[in-house]
Length: 256
Length: 292
Image (tube, rainbow over all chains, first blue to last red; front, side, top):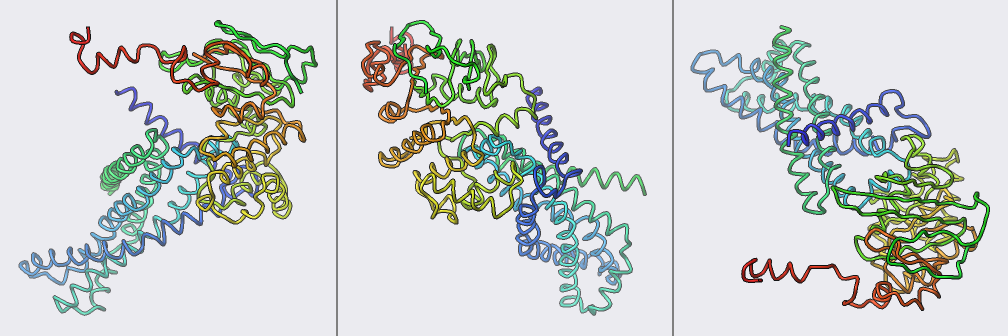
């Protein structure tokens, strides 16, 4: 059992290694050996555009919930003017990247795992191999490049949506002026907060894509296997995103 | 084209080799004493096989007898546990990853269900292979794609997606894609699977044309007897991971070996039936004590 798990981890690492081998020194070479740009753009559309409506709903609502919860306590303490500071910092350092990671796990992770799993079942992956076109270059690398570009962008978008949700509550329920709210938020946030949030988003995106690839690529049992891989990809991605979050938070806590 | 005059039917493995003396350079596939095992189960047990340039060899056998495993050994997807596999002058079982990539470009493979790239159009299915392995311009690739599609009679399907194609069309598009790099050796894994008789005849005609006009060497795994006898120069019959018969189509039609006879006639009862299934059924149904 343990041995099988170690082999699985080894296969996962090998796939990522192969993809990086194609991405790092050879990205976008014109002919043989290039990561096809058109495939990267297809994936960018999926990761950066397709996910936006869901992010607006999730992060907008969470921003509102956070503001409402904090308002009750801050009112009791008589420091309700600190609401924008807390919502801003919480959203940028933690909530937006984490929720982006979880949304990506459900949105991109599930679709990648089912897509690659179906390709495994229908022998499409074998067909790539039979033409000496490495699936790690043609299928995984474009997804990794796309998520590396898209994840920080959608995380940054998440900052605005989450803070916007808090703003709506502050203005509508607490009567705080929008200008005052935004000024306080900007004052509270440092560049290191933004960078940490973006770095987390990037890390979560890569974790989600690599796990989804791995689960899809090892499908063996037809349609049942595809379903199982999709579930496994989402569950493992969410756990891995939260674990990565903890690791990065601890690391940055140590670094001060 | 090599044609043998005598049929070999034996209960033990026989070496399948051309009977005519010929130039060794004409040999495209040479398999010697190949054994393949999975999890303790031996799939192939000492296969010897030689295929000459321009020959169409059909591999027959029941499900699970090792036909597809044999093809996978030729592409290098599987490494035999024992024995040697030589294709187009290279020992496939000894190639490193880079050499294996180069080898696969020379071996066309038609998958059982086509394995078309579903997210791409027919044009893109062929173009991706040509972009990958040639330095042709986009215009040249476009011309080549039309030529390959014309070869399989589907030039008008160039902008369709696989989901818009029938089973027969998918198979022919997959064949056009497999032929896009003009491989000297083509491997067909159940080309007739899921096809109606007309589509099957159409695929057969293409396979025969490729051999006759282009001198292409072909190995065809199939269950369709009519199709096999139509396209084959030579046939072999696999059973229990061994070659138990080989000969020309006319020799296969007339042979007397009961195992081959059962397969060719499609009899439900005979020596090829899985042993012990009925005994196991009684035990599984009634339990060991009652079954006895």
